[in-house]
Amino acid sequence: MAEKQYDIVIAGAGFAGTLTALVLKNIGFHVCLIEKGTHPRFAIGESSTPIADMILRSLSVKYNLPWLHDFSRYGSWQRAHPEIVCGIKRGFSYYKHYPGEAFASDTLHSNELLVAASVSDTLSDTNWLRADFDAFLVGKAVESDIDYFDEAEIMSAVRENKEWLFTVRRREDLIAFRADFLIDATGSGLLADKLFAVKSSADRFLTHSFGVFSHFHNLPRWTERLHQKNISTEDYPYDADNSALHHVLDEGWIWALRFNNNLTSFGFALNGEELSLRNMPTEEIWSTMRRRYPDIDGLLGDATLSASPGIILRSGRLQRRLERTFGEGWVAMPHTVGFVDPLFSTGIAYSLAGIERVVEMLAENRDFGQPLYDRLQEYERIVSAELKLIDLLVAGCYKTMRHFPLFTAWSMLYFTFTIVYEQKRLKNIPCDYFLEASNSDILEIAYTTYEELLALMRGPVISDTDIVKFTDTVRERIKPFNTAGLLNPAARNMYHHTVAKLDETSAPF
Image 1 (cartoon, one colour):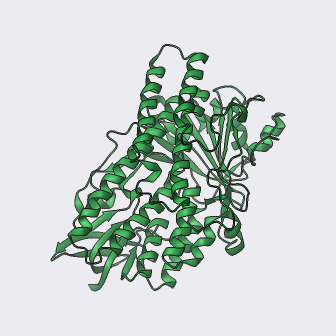
Image 2 (cartoon, rainbow, N blue to C red):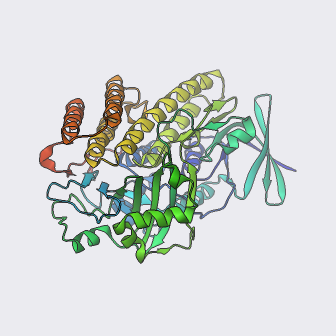
Image 3 (spheres, rainbow, N blue to C red):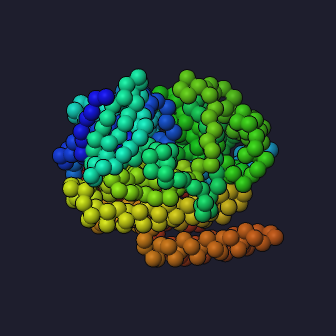
């Protein structure tokens, strides 16, 4: 059995694992990348945010990866790599549908909410076709002389004298890897369970959801359907199809993320507490949801499944969390540690924030001694607090999906907390916790408002007066941080303000 020696082995060659390998290589570590599958491959999780873009620029400058900067905005991406498929994401768009009814709105946009996150298409965030982008990064890793092993599975791990001995099966061969440290970037809890008996659990999550999804060609544009209904989009801050487009249902929500090659990622994220849906076969869920919502059925009528993946996929419960985040000689990246739900597109940004943290800890503790484990204990506390806050914000949205004005008011907590976090990064102020999950003022707003929301939802009837009172309360609470005019009645649910006020001359951070 051949034997190889490294400082760090990284398991999982998605974008987080591969980018971590590239950064660590550039600061002097001898690393290798082990991937159970092959690239290109289908992957879900495609929507970036201003936070993600800021971190990409920061990593590019700090770790001498100049080519990475191009991927932080749609315009520079298209100039540098038009062959790598992506899409324009100008912000977040929400449309409320009611079972059995055609979509309708009014001059107040009562069933619509658009929140801009950029000032132009050129400076916008992006939807990543992960198959293309992940494969590109792996190519960069190989160009950088990082040893890359695909179709390779870690079968066992033995810790001896502060060193790992990994046995890896690659196709028909067995390879022995020795390394001081392992980074689990697999994006699930399976490897940690297999190697370290660390279990994953959905206990203590407030959110309970699952996904049914695929990729489609020829999905009609939603704005075209609005125009067919004579619903005006003249006062929109952007074309809603060039955004993270959400259709809010009574049972959950739909994402529709467009790419610039006529492909769209489309899926339902459904409330797992709806047992009648959860117990259905996948195809029956898909057809049931189409029948309930006429405009969704109309959108999907002419769409065709993409060859990859070629079928409708279904997840188990989306929520999961490892019992431990690290151990002797290993650490898990945030997306491996846990996941809540894709509602607010936190996945890419959160993974990139995790790369920053893990790389910094390793760079400052190259001997993998006790000070590293002191930092890892802090990392575990941080990740736990962040997942807890994300869970609370998403759970509140699921509670309010039948009552769109409440959904609109509650969702402003997320956008407010994002503003606070982004503005700190723009000012180069250290951000220890994602979305300010350690900020006592933020946490007080979040938990107090959530308890009030639960009390409101427990009532026999939710009146218009109740909704106005709750909205007024949220508006007053976010006021000290609200620099974007959120919940201003004059905006009529159309927010033209950019959260991250960036231009081409902005600092890379």
